[in-house]
Image 1 (cartoon, rainbow, N blue to C red):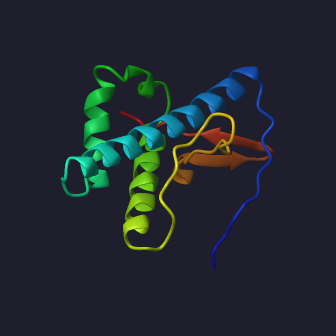
Image 2: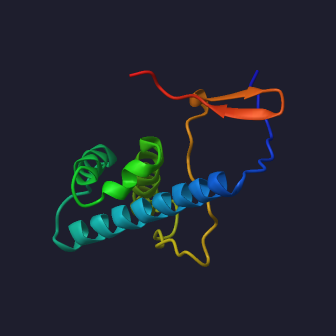
Image 3: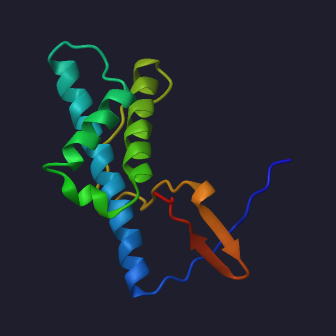
Length: 131
């Protein structure tokens, strides 16, 4: 049996800002990945796997893209994976060519690992990994 929960969030201003930041970072990484795949294709190279791109993003987080550290790493990883899947689906003739996501027209969304979420009464808690 698959269990699902439908949750309505009522974030305060700080939480709302963090949610927008997460969605914008997911959009940025998706667009960055799509641009990287298009450039790679124009050079005549083979498809860059999502694992390689995620490793590249991790390295860039340490230098030029340090703002990606402000949200969970799963958000950036999943956005890169989603873009690579959309790109593969185009070449497998399963869908149209993936489009760049815009701030104005795109639906704000991002991936969050549900294993790290826990509900208690009417509250949703985010569990941090112990290091």
